[in-house]
Image (cartoon, rainbow, N blue to C red):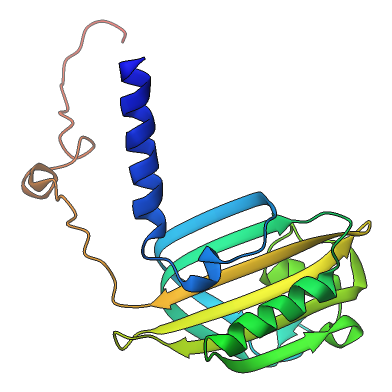
Length: 206
């Protein structure tokens, strides 16, 4: 029983520490079932900042008219909601949160204005699917207190009457240091292939 209690305390402290540095948008997110979560300490994210069009020719495929590239620590959440909610309700809730926290709206679209669902699956994730007429998207930016910038892209769509949301938040900050260990022996000595010896006068088969 004591071991279980200690383990519970450790897990709770890890959970608190993991969420202590997250943006306020995460702390007050509506109750929903978490479908997928990803966290990267440092990555480059290409945000959709304009209309997505389909181009033909040698480089055939979907292409966003405007892409914003940012580097930093990212958090990605995909949530599922109950049939009592709707994608437009959840989307407007997010818009209110963005306005409350002084985010600058860089681009947004709604329903058929957002274009083909296949394009969003390409740019966001293949885990978003549903009725194209219920999709909503917004990209916003906020300047942080430490000179950094927060980017948020939020997308909602109804799937068989039940909404799903995709949210990616990026804290654009300096790359954390990773001290790579170099194997100096590989630099000082030849590789196994170069170290092979040729022996003459072998009188038996290998």
